[in-house]
Image (cartoon, rainbow, N blue to C red; front, side, top):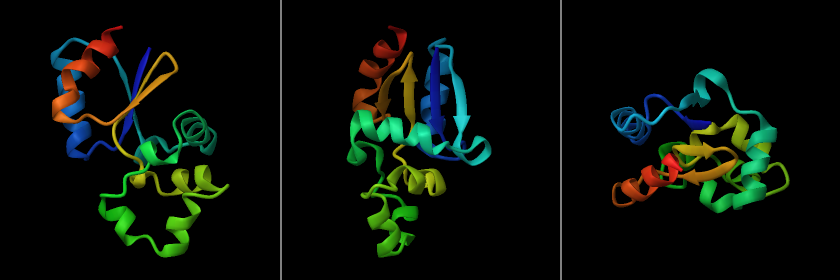
Length: 118
């Protein structure tokens, strides 16, 4: 089963979802804003990938966070902070049967789609 995590109004997430649909790849979409993000799931991503690949430092949400909130994303409470500020997660997050990939860069689309097909 493939789950795509993200925010429905994110341009990259929109592009990824449209491409998966066009390619006939079945997936379930989990919208952070509508469905939330459990700290336990955020913790599992951090444990498996580290915080840096998960964290989106380029977005406006990151820039709007005060220093204490940014620092919390690197400490023991990082999973709770990600759950609270899910917009700072790099998007989309693809989970294919427990394996993770993050992002949908234009140059990497074909490789990612091949990976999603299994």
